[in-house]
Length: 413
Image (cartoon, rainbow, N blue to C red; front, side, top):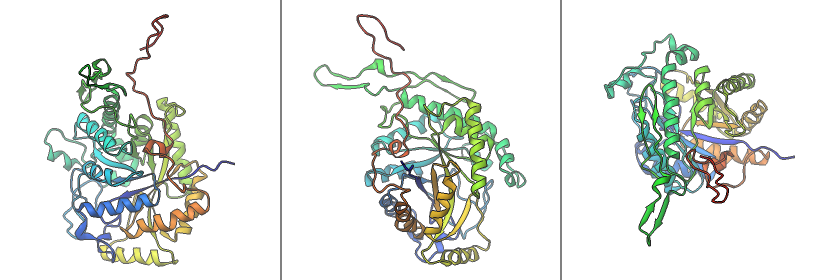
């Protein structure tokens, strides 16, 4: 019997996902904005044969509140641009996927599409993209071109309320992803001729205007960047409620969901399936991978991870809260949970290390070997692209014309 292997990714953010992670004993707070720090983390993730890493980003400093800035000075504030950081990491790695987060509410889709395509060239087919709307109204002040909904404390207590208030921004984000995909397709794969003898570098007939017109922007195209190795880098989105599930159904190749137990995972996947059916997506032609999120503290000795988290909670002045399930325990215990949740239909997991590098190395050096012993995770990379890791087909350019048979005149546009 063929066993389906888990997909496994890690979310890298600052010193880790606990607000006090920078104060952990093995943290490296003085290096958070140095290229070597991130190179070490991604090399460790690649040594664990993970599908991909994600890099967080935002248009304002981090905040303890989801919907507004704060003035705390006892938590990490500031970050590097995720796309530029991923471009730096691309030549330092060989197999792992690199998925930066970019804001799509206040940035131009043409610029974002070119940046991600360029990253895919730099990574030789290992780039992905996590588009993110701007949920904080304060971010708009950096650009002074528009306003966005001001969420209240009551809104953020209910993911459905948040999604409802932000629904217009999700609708706009669907258009942003569609523009990016059209721009990625606007150069056919063989548009570059590079024929010295004839002096033809490109076949102009194989560059296409995308002529996108929507309520928020109009984009003519073509892109300035030739079609990248994956054709279309995979789009990854995080979803907590019905509106973002719908966004994922329209726009994403991978959706990250946040169940807190097995039955919750089953219920969420049912909602995702409903959204997929509602938008008419054919998942045979366009598969949608479903990964669950967990924030993890791992130690080989029982009880140590919980005590480590408790110490950080004390330093932070509050118990850690998260949209995802918080797991403390041993790698073996986590492997049990992952394999249990997989029975709901999940394709894999994105793990958020509570502290870095401690919990990342626990994933790569303890959890991964445990999953390998159970036949649930790869023992070597068998693909060279992120689409390959995820089992996603490489799409053809939508603008490619089938060749015309000179004898029959048969072909199609």
